[in-house]
Image (cartoon, rainbow, N blue to C red; front, side):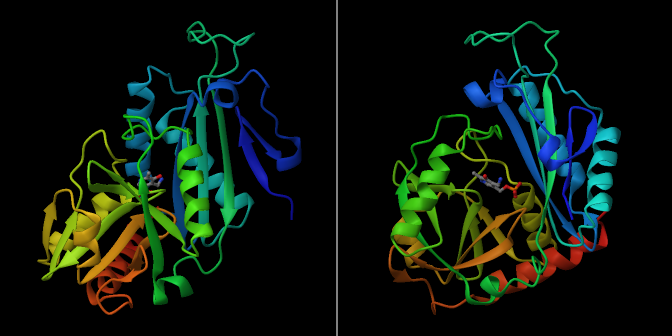
Length: 286
Ligand code: PMP
């Protein structure tokens, strides 16, 4: 089955969808994105992703080419057309294609580019990886200073993933001024004495939509949460560790820089939070 994608107002087979070589997403990484997960053919936390998208656009003085209600309809149509039961929807908006390459933003009447496509991921929720956990390494955080804006400048996170792979691991946690900021594409957590610790929100990290939901569910379940920075040594000495993202939900982390965390297997808090997150998110999926 050929995948149907959405480009600038049209639903097209993926091999007929094109974007200009002058597109500022391509030339300057002048674009933002969102990834929304699909479970049971429904969207998880569409509202949260739409709100963060609007904020990313606003921080970059970029106008949206689409209203929220229409954006929801495009998401749903792509899920229908591609028969996605479990998977992801990728959305990208760029400042569009000016007529030439110029660092200055093009005039306001340049239409933004919007692209959406689906990724079919059967078995996303019942992930075998979540049952054993993943291994991470720590690397220096060498990204720019506005990590709260979800831009498509993802080269350093890609490099981080490759560094992790080269070390026989699955992901990297980035470290700045002695403290973990976040994973290459996820928010990082440790658990010590029953308390869930994750870095506080600032421009230093992406404000994860999954993070917000997981912390809300944790507090509702009377779990203690502390939002503060933590070090690699503290993580290595923790009882548990995990990360969150829209594409992996809650994922146990069992090793950091070659050192087992806790028992070296997924801990009870991460396991329970994953279950709660999946159950509660499914109930309100749209
Ligand atoms: N931090 C970074 C750097 C990310 O790329 C992501 C995923 N896009 C996250 C955190 C997690 O955010 P979310 O829960 O909204 O997917």
